[in-house]
Structures are given as structure tokens and as C-alpha cells.
Amino acid sequence: MNQIDARGFSCPEPVLMTKKALANGTPLVVLVDNETPLQNIRRFATNMGYRVEWKEIGDDFEVTIL
Image 1 (cartoon, helix red, strand yellow):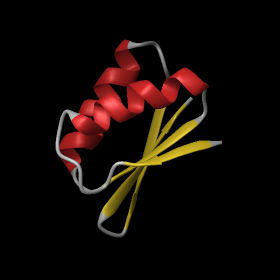
Image 2 (spheres, one colour):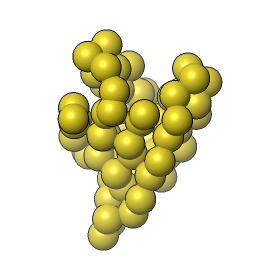
Image 3 (cartoon, helix red, strand yellow):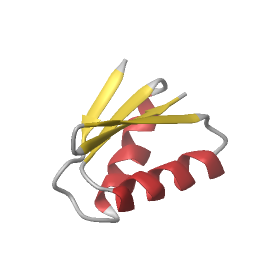
Image 4 (cartoon, one colour):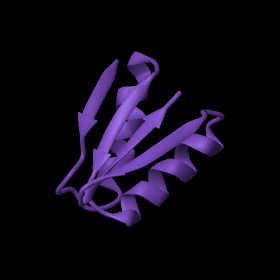
């Protein structure tokens, strides 16, 4: 499973990192540290036809793109 750590980056960087990592296929796990990149990644992946799941882990979020 591919995983990227986008914590500490501000938008649009987490979405760009996600787009690049998706070139290696799914599933992809993206770690983010606030709700703005969470929502942007969810919207981007959904619009691209992927299924998105997410969960809160402490102060961070784990987004799984399938």
C-alpha cells in the first residue's frame, strides 16, 4: 500500500502530492493534519472516480483512496 505524509503542508500541496502518488496506483493512504486538506483531497479523489475513506487519528486524519 502506498502512503504519503502530507502533514505540515498547506493547500494545494497535499492535493498535488496525492495526484502524483496516485500515478503509482491504489490503495493510497494520505496523512494530513487538518480538515482543509482532508476535504480538498476527498473532493479531488471523488471527482476522479475513486472511493475515499477517512478516519481521525489523534489530531491527524488518515485518508484512504481506493
